Length: 162
Image (cartoon, rainbow, N blue to C red; front, side, top):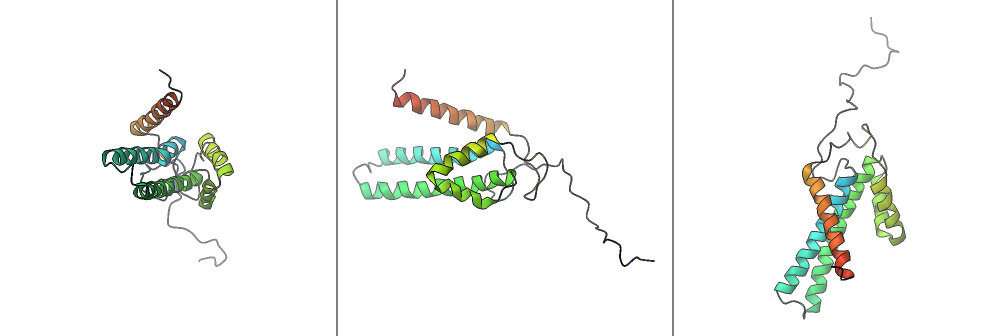
């Protein structure tokens, strides 16, 4: 005989808290860790701007300020969209709402937010945004080393070191 006051039974198994998934760079959902955030949010912007500078030089567009400004604006908007999407995913790894990514648009707060996202470890288990991401791949680590190399080279170029 069924008890009408009993709690309903679920036929779906409980999610495994140790399960993880491998994030992809083109998804807007899910969670990403610190290293993936730094690489996926900023490396595309750096590569895009380097490609843009190369094309402006090769196509001789230096004298055509209007075209250069439009190209830089378009590249900047693409880079901003990528950074906001990756910031949202990183915030989900920390069980924070995605709208906090809009803080990236406020200059004093964006540096604090980037520091928070780069310093704080994500939730070890699953949270309401999904299971934790898998370990970083060799390609993600190589992307981070590439970004560090670019940063050191840019600093050396600014001060004419070496």
